[in-house]
Length: 476
Image: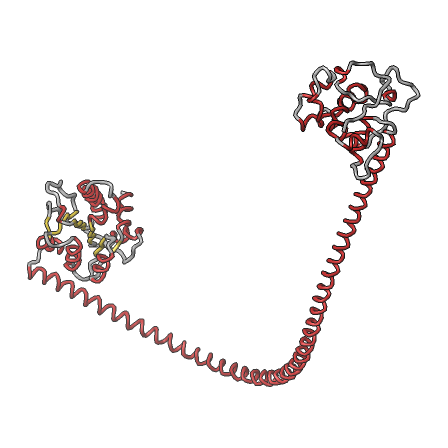
């Protein structure tokens, strides 16, 4: 229905087109900014915060729909804001303009009333429906300002405060209900815990009864143990008396044994003196016997015309079962003990008439594997020549003949270089060399091949690992 427009006597008269249907304000004289107002008029009322926010929101919503010449200059920039920012950022300017500019307020009111419908008409008439939102009614009353608008705002403030109080009361009731619920829950938990404690108390009482029974049994056992201990103590005292008597008997027997021992030592001294005299006689006889054997050996060598040998046992094996790049004279050798400790190689080579046999490729491929086979052979043979020169030992190095290369340089003095023949490996040739040596001569075989080491050990040779020789060569 059409809305009535209250008349405002303090506004300048405008033609109907300029006013654009603006609603007059009968209480416009209440604005202190109006120069024609009565100075005794009451100032602007204090608005509740929800009412103030609603007034600003209504004004911000209609602000873009006003013509630009009807928008106050301070609000023209605010009118260009986005809807969600207009009421939030322009609230102070909008509130100030609504208070200071009644004409602007009337223009805003006209648009707001057009959107408010029946509620706006009721507010214009100075009444408010009972079911209406008091905040909305107060906001419209502030903008329209009908007769009794201050009472409407006061009633709205009272309603807002009542709603706030109701909300506080509801929150208090809700908190009380929550506390009651928590208390009920706590009581239930306490009941459950009490039941658990009662069960635990019953169990503890039962265990206490069991412990008491066990304590009675332990006390009875303790009394029995103490009785047995008293009996044992009595038996111990008896045995100690017997032991004392036995100890006295033993001491007497020991004194008699010492006397017999002294007599025996005296007899032994006499026997040792007699034995020493007898040994001196035996030593004289043994010396005469050895002297006789030595003279007999010299006579036998002279009788048989035995000259010093030119070939050693290994030379016969080399002639029969190996190929040789050249012949090198044999020299003295050394002897060592059966051990894989590389430090023992020097001890072995220091033994008289020792023969050092080396598994050639087993050593070179372990120590000089990055070289060619020819370079490996040359390096090993030259190193063995240094060992032969230092120790004077007989040295034999054996290579597999399948990879033999002709035109090798002469072997160093004291080193015999052999290659196995077709159909036979260097391992077999090494075993032949060991078997050819007489029993008792120290033969040292250098090879990391377990089969070779086990084979030569059975024939009385001393196997050593390849690392022992490589370290010995590195020191040379």
